[in-house]
Image 1 (cartoon, rainbow, N blue to C red):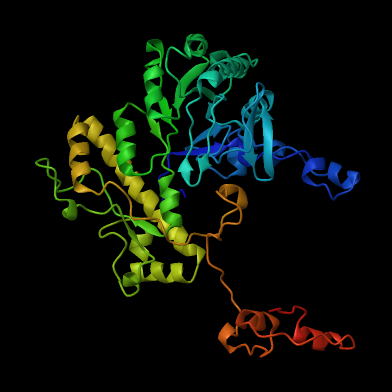
Image 2: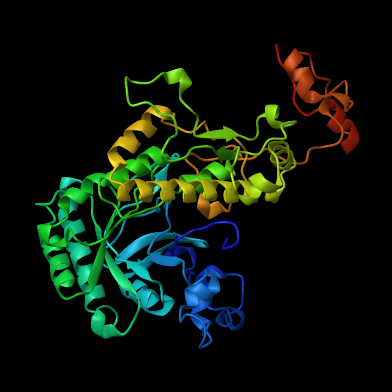
Length: 451
């Protein structure tokens, strides 16, 4: 990652490394065996050498020190949990099933992980349903519970002795989440955040919905903001930056790589026009589908003049071949390329802000490019069960079966007196012989047709 990309920050969800208690997770084991299995995350047992950063989580995932490490209670994007949150816990979806994460457990995780930024815990229902983002605006009856629970949980984090603030001696910065509620409805919760900011314990804000930025108190407008809004396109990233977000996540990078799509956009858009509405057909695509057979003999790089490892060392034909062969290297090369495109995208974005031409450059970019990526239909690498939730019972597999029977069904000789075939054709079944053996009974069948 450090050799071929310039990734500035990584978000880690604590639910990805939580474990169920041993006796629940390993029911078939004896008590003695189960007691020997750890019930806490593995990185808790790590002790960093003196010359390393004192962050067990950073050491566990081999993250270079200059890269910003953000820790949140749930992964991003999150999958919908089986149940709702309670007054004292958050319902999460771990690698071994659903469970309730108590607030003190998360506070302990923040203390032991040693992340640069810790996202506060709030009563917000996150998740994906049927492939779409599901961030519910709480109903009238639940709003009071959301405000009450979020305020109590945040006060618990702010009250953790020696964990946050200038006098704590720690590097972890606490960023408070803003629930998707109107400012007046969550006034008591916002007052708690203002008190924490005045004490120097809250150093940033986290927003899960763009509209929630309007609820930020005036006294906290100067704090940096992190958008966990799951933008689907680079255009939505530009919208978030225009609203004043300082940090933006881009989950569509991995989704595009897994679908076999190579990004082709840049910012600012060279040659874009500010006049008129733009020719829809002349707009550039945001990416190319490398599963397309037309790339099988294409010796060009993914993007002309691109300086990433994938484009300087390999061709479209090679990447397309790797995808057809289901080689993991295909998705690795696409991920390297797509991250390089995003690095250049944000580099151009920062230059545009510095030059005070951001609004004009965004308008030109919107006219130059399509608003959506090509449809993500390519087969991705194997995914774990807790990374995707079935929308209905018994759905079809995401990827087609790799191996099938050598003999096609048409070549398999079928028995002429098959029972099912006789029933389908309406043929009268032969009467059963009570002295017949099993083979004869199987050939004749057990069902009889009656006129």
